[in-house]
Length: 466
Image (cartoon, rainbow, N blue to C red; front, side, top):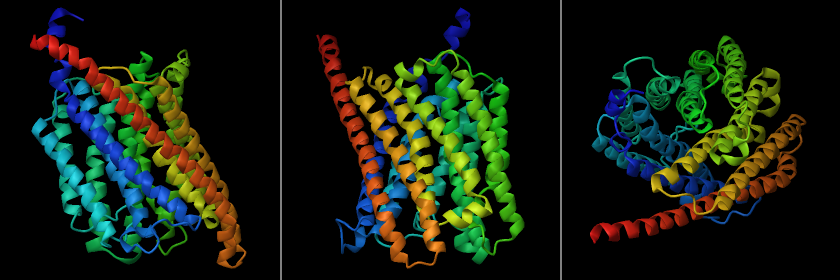
């Protein structure tokens, strides 16, 4: 690199607001704690030991919605925004449009998430899965998503030369997320009803995963993995195949949530075929990353963030393979409404995206705090409790699902299937306890690392004062 180019390259501190990245990560971890606490309470409810019995505002149905919304809009959205404030300026070599806007978005988004929780507790939830946000929150959330897109797209559109695949994913996600949220929260509420609303709701459920968290997640993997492995992605062309395959097939899959309904069968068949096609697309992405790992497999043992990332990739492959089976009409007739679907959802939301984001935090917090982790051992405990916990929970619920389906098909009394399921739900609670304990370990390690960083700063501050 020539001296002139080196002089023109912006400094990291001029590009990235590290304090804001830390704030987003801390907010995300706070919401993850709330979400896991809600899941914990639901786990006790399932084994007939609800600790909040008789309290309407904290009834299981409302806690369940807080559990899902806190993980989607509280943890995932905040963690992604923190990671984007690190990655986008460094890739575009330009800061976001306006740092003041970034801080405004941070505060406004916390208001949106907390107001959503309050509205749900007060019984104001919409009747839309993953779209339970009260109607008076939806315009605010949509405005926030628009501001996010403007803030991050400003440096991207000014980029000269070829655009790295990470920015392809990010750019698409900013546009898709805004359109997906508008589609799911406004069209069924105000413009269509009946099966049409069901079809739109199905698209929203899946597009929220496929067009919001998936492009942001894979975009971060294409950014962080080559940096940590110190080698380029194996095939740039294959990475674009993955991007365009996602863009083409994923928007068509949502109707598979509503098989055997009055929705026209050609739409149901199209969703089935598109879902199977997504597995083929995901296979190309996984091949790209695992071939990239060739010759550097030692990173799986000595590089903890890489281990988080590739564990998430394994879960992603399993999730999409499982989805390709469960979306078929034959299999759907058996497992619909069973715990198979719950295990599938936990595998993708925690086993994939949360694993990626926790790995990102494991990598970035030492750089944000300018010190190593207080305890590598606690980092290991966090990983193993989380990975084994989600593996156990997913396997437990996926095994329970077909049995529940056969019980219902046999026309035995409902209580028979419930009694059968309680041991599985007890194992689910054990797995959830492992994951929750892992989070507490991580928070403890982070607090000790933060204190360590503050102690390291004190001599420098005293020396500067002298």
